[in-house]
Amino acid sequence: MDVVEYLRISQDRDGEERGVERQRRENREYAAARGLAIVATFCDNDVSATSGASRPEFERMLASRPGAILAWHQDRLLRLTSDLERVIALDVPVYTATSGTLDLSTPAGRAVARTISAWSQYEGEQKALRQKASNRQRAEAGRWQFSRRPYGYQRRDGRIEIVETEAAIVRELYRRYIDGESYYALAEELTERGIPTFGGPWTMGRVRQILRNEHYAGITTYNGMPVEAESIEWEPLIDRKTWAAYLRVRDGRKRAGSWSTATRHLLGGLIYCDVCGSRMTARPDRGRQVYACGVNWCVSRGAADLDALVTGLVIARLRDPKVVDRLREAPDTAPLEAELSELHRRRDDIADLLADGLLSRQKAREKAEVLTSEIEALTRRLDALRGDSPLTALALAESIPERWASLSITARRRAIEESGVVVRVRKMGAGRRTFDPASVEITWR
Figure: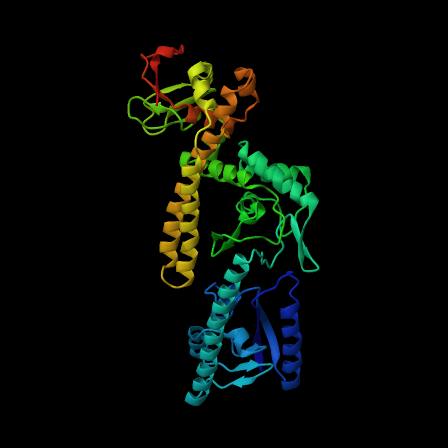
């Protein structure tokens, strides 16, 4: 009899398919002993049957309308009762190398199969609950559990150790992203340099996945949310200040809507059209770079002219002794620090509510996003008060122009935002091409 073979293993940590190869070997021995001819093989390697994720090869097998099916064990083929009903609908024999034949042609046989499947599903759900509890306990104990090793670390003799050559690349990625480079540009440059990786080539998604990993900053997580731990079992690759700077830059680019205008052009998304009030973005126009109304193209102005005007105004403002005196003052940050600590505690409590079933995943995500936004805004205020902002560094520099020239585009944009300048570009007369500073309205918050 001709049969199709189905192979599956839930987790393949090293990607070498040793688990499914063991299934394949025993299936072939079973088929040879019973005169079964395997005419096709469908294999879902490293795919869970209880997580709800699609099993592409399982779907292909059903669509092929097989005459008979051979699997290593029933739970490799069926873990959910819904999958069993789909196999029953095929009305074909099902053989298993380790648990005999499933007789799905009789009511009694189907009842046995449904009972086995129901208990398999139950065990899978119980295992998931145990795994979640274990993951939470590990997070609170400061442990980092991973199936595939993260770039920059390796596990040796039960300890997590830094891989220095990779750690240097991780630190470089954070620094360059904060300084204004995009995920895409970083991936392209690493590929050009021939920097080795594992698990696939350097891509925009891979760089983004690395930089979004809180563990590099020594932050433990449970269900995607930070969990406070007294100590951690690994040495962080970056400090919390770098992590906060990454989040600030990343979220700033999201608000601007495009990484290119947020990082390559000084005023993109920071200045306004005086006609309709929309933000102006950078774009090419007849061979030159301009800032233009992002909605109705009401006004546009040469980017170089506007950059020079606003830069000069900000530098001049920072030369005001009153501004310098205010920035030199040592403010009391204790109330804000206490408020920040409370926000972190409230965000950590969300993980407990989710684990206890008192909050749905969607509601938990929404509440966490709101609190994260508040945390980031408060962190920015504290940075400015503590003197960690580029605006403070500029005001206290011996030479403000020289300090400005040394800053990245991202740092200059932050300084402009923190200076309180509001720039509105007015409409000029028809046919006028010469830049007129009077056509730009400047106010200070």
